[in-house]
Image (cartoon, rainbow, N blue to C red; front, side, top):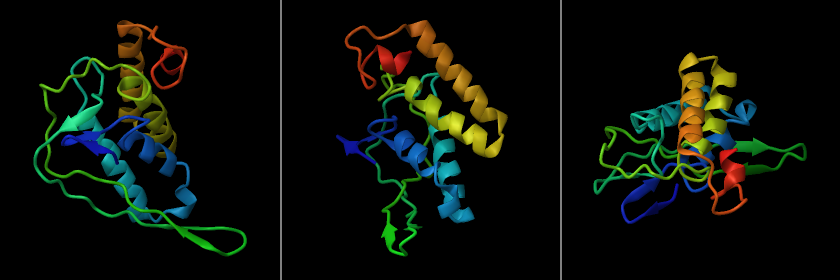
Length: 160
């Protein structure tokens, strides 16, 4: 996960949501404990949700946080093994109400959360993840499509 100026990035392009989204596509290669860490890490994102349904681009913290390593191996048909590093799961942190959450674009904010929480809804069937998807779509619609570019990251494609 990307950390810059004591900010832990949460979004799809630069942070936790993107990491979890990719990992969630390989449950057959993960242990139950590893999948549980992915779910717990996604649930951490829910604690950061603002009242309007957006999730800010980053969480502010000047304190150290707990990181539980999530290492796993991918086996290939040729038998070689590849190891991944870790997913950060944050423990004991509360949502920061003073976090600037005006970024509503795929890389930062609600639009990028839709992919992750849609995937988790498919995997778990938990209604809370579907509710997050609907809330994220609603805040994206209300705040409007980005007009600064056509790109996925900072543009109309990522908000469409």
